[in-house]
Image (cartoon, rainbow, N blue to C red; front, side, top):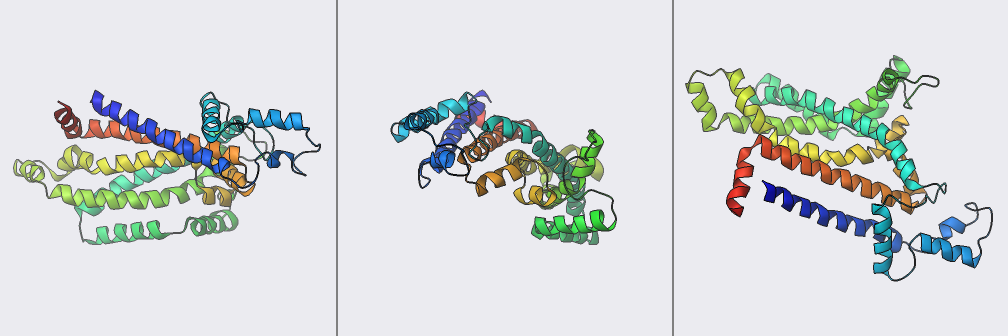
Length: 326
C-alpha cells in the first residue's frame, strides 16, 4: 500500500507541474505586454516612469527567458504570492480565500445532497430492474442529466422565489442578518440545481452496478444460505456499488473550488465561479492563474483521497498492488 500511495503522490506532483506550466503559458503567450494592463488609461491615474516599469516587471517575474520567468512565478506561487489582480490592483490570494468558503459550502452541500438521494434511488432501481419503480427513477435520472442548469435555475427562481416567495432569488445573505440559517435559506435553490445533475449521474452508476452485483456468485451463495435480500444489499452489494461513485466524487472535488459559473451567476452567489467569470471578462491573468492552481490542487487531493477510500472499500486493490510490487 505504501508503494501504491508513493506512486500516486509522484503522479500528482507531475500533474501539478504540468498544470502550472499551462497556467503560466496563459500569461506568457497572451498577446501584448502584460504591463499594459497595469498602466493603460482607466487602470492607472498616473504614468509610470521607466524605472517603475522595470521594477514592476521584475516583481511580476517578467524578466529573463521563459524558464527563468516560470521558475520565478512558480516559486512565488508556492510561497503564497499569487500576484496582483489586474482588475482592482489588490493581492489575488486574499480575494480568492475570501470567496472560497461560499463556493465550498454551496458545492459541498450540493454534493452531499446528491449522494444522500442517489444511493437509495440507485439501489431501488437496480433491485427492481425493468419494473415500474425502475422506469420512473431512470426516467427522472435521464431528465436530470439532460436538464440545462441555467434553465432549471430560472425555473426555480420563478416558481419558488417570484410566485411562492419561499426562497430568495439571489445573494448569500439578507442585509443586516448574519446567521447560518439565513445562508442555508439563500443556498437552498442553487444547491438543488447543482445536486440534480450529479444525483442523476450517481443514480445511473449505482443502478448499473447493483444489477451486475446481484448476478455475482457471492450473492447467490449468500441467498442459498438463507440471508435476506436486505442484508445482502447492506453488507455486500452496497459497498461494491459505491466504488465508482467514490471515483466520481473525488473528481468532483475540483468543483468545490471553481463552483458552477452559470449557477453562481444566475443566483448572484458571491463565490469563486463569479470571481473567475469577472477575471475572464477583464483578462485578469493573475486571478485566473490563481484559481486554476487552487482548483488543480484540490482536484488532486480529492482524487488521492478517492484512491485511499478505494483501497479501504475494496481490499483487492491493495492486495493487487502488493502482488505486483512484491
